[in-house]
Length: 178
Image 1 (cartoon, rainbow, N blue to C red):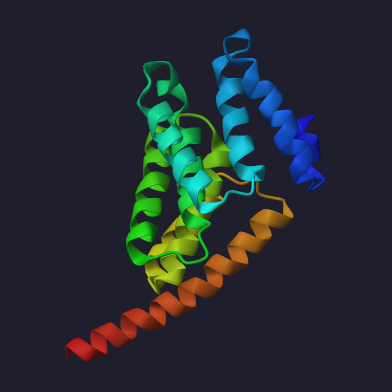
Image 2 (cartoon, one colour):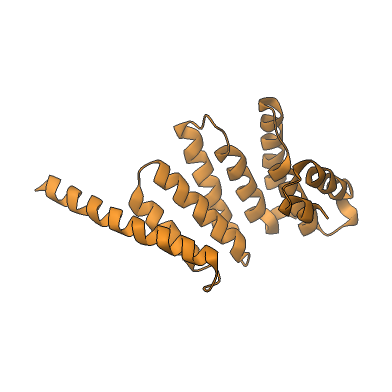
């Protein structure tokens, strides 16, 4: 039910439903519980203090042995919470980038999450004006998205536009060194 509320953009209802799942703790499979924690983080509106507390809680979850198979979801959620700050400082961007990379490193077979992580990394690189890095992550995103979908077309167009910018950037760097 929580995911349906989330799709309908009913964040309050989704948060309550995810919280019900979280409260079941050891009565449900761990994967479901970890996904519910991530869903709760996606749908909750945090105050700065609550966000700091939840980030500390996520760090605690990441260290626990029983969550070792779900580190990809935990690291991605951690990166999302850091990235969502409106006043994102450069050092927080680096930390968010590290969490997305750790999510990719620990991800074995969750292709939609891999696609999301690569997309987020490309956005961060684009914001830092590293167009080559953004292009590479968009290219990686395409390998995890089904081919004949609108999302694939959208990402491919974005990547193609970035390839032109990356080429021009390379030419400028090459001419500057001469």
